[in-house]
Length: 561
Image 1 (spheres, rainbow, N blue to C red):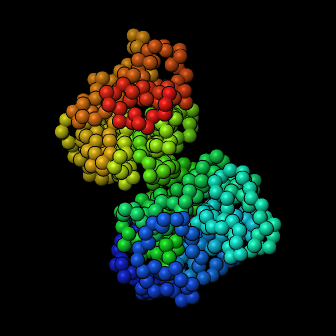
Image 2 (tube, rainbow, N blue to C red; image 1 turned 45 degrees about the vertical axis):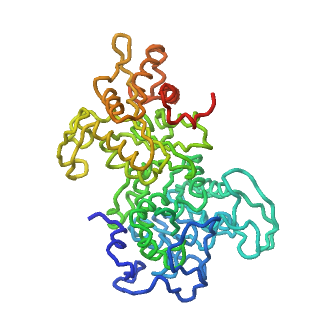
Image 3 (tube, one colour; image 1 turned 90 degrees about the horizontal axis):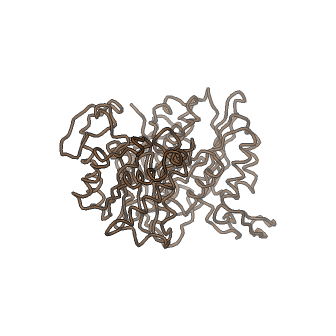
């Protein structure tokens, strides 16, 4: 059976009987989550924590002990963890860092796991206190360094108690201070500068840096758990991307697990405060980090795992770093579809881009979030079962969903990916060979109707697009798809009374005007995936199509020409 740390919490009552995950075997103990552990300085919760009106700083633990020094086998690679108390060794069952159970997912005969995280540290103080230099001194070629900071970076830049905050953002700004705590003159940098430093120095040692987003805090609003302590997870992703290093979005992966669990069950994982989880919460986070690492394109830990690590299921979408609304207070336009909307990781790999990565410049970012959640290789059917539930949890009243499918809906439904041809009500029961699940398959039109109905049920507005044309010429013209998926999309849109943008015809007409020679460089492969120039042209056609509508629902959000 595949491992999931969620099995543990789902199987336990909220009163919480906990089996030790720190090496105590059958040692079973009971405790009340509302009672402060011995030696605590406070921050004990008796009720679920609401969202604060002002930024909430991470509470300090009673003690932040140094990592336990372990002898490393010099003949093996090392997996280092640089972070704060959410990763560091904690007090035990009532409070534990995720990097403690993390070691159980790896084979000690194949890799050393060195948890160098230290409670109370920010990206800045991990560097200024020499903790980073101590870690780096042991790094060698072939090692992996996981970097996760942010919970403590929102604190004061200069005070007499912590003085651990970094400057906001990822730029080159600095601030000179006479540190009230250390009594030393110091140049304070941005959060991004410190992460950049760790990445660069790890690379210089011939090792592999991997950046992680933050762990989850027990803060809720409208039945959803908080995603992010400030913008530190976003900045971590941006720094990783600018350096061309891999990023594991721990925050959103765990939040996707916590939201369906609900506030009460998740609250039991945080008996001490809103930031620090117990041993079960630590293991959930640890399993999520392992899942994220295994799901990366390179899977850097594939040969290093224990049986427990091998049992963790891969989440292919985890490595795609799909975006979320940058400003949740604004309306959002969610783009859903296949690789012609967002190719791969949205980074232009192989010279291929989707139009969804270029449409944002036409909209006012102060009024509307553009959230490109399209995933390559998906059909109307597979996106509905795999990715659509993740979009639905983000979708709110006043949002928009623009959908474009069809390229991957050809073939036999029995093969596991395609829908039934047409727009009828017929269904087909199959045993899906891709996941060994029994499944009821609908028509292409049936899936579009489901997207439309779900979107409307959330108080959002659906917009249907026909699929972009392929670079297939016949008699001097680009081949259209009116008799299949393009026509079916239009029929469903008209019947459901939703806005329809006929990208198939609009783009094909533009290609006809340009001719084969000028169209050729607009593609990054033989006939389906566009280059950056082609994706820009298609994005322009999306906007042109919206402006052709009698009632353009996105008109208030467009930038003035």
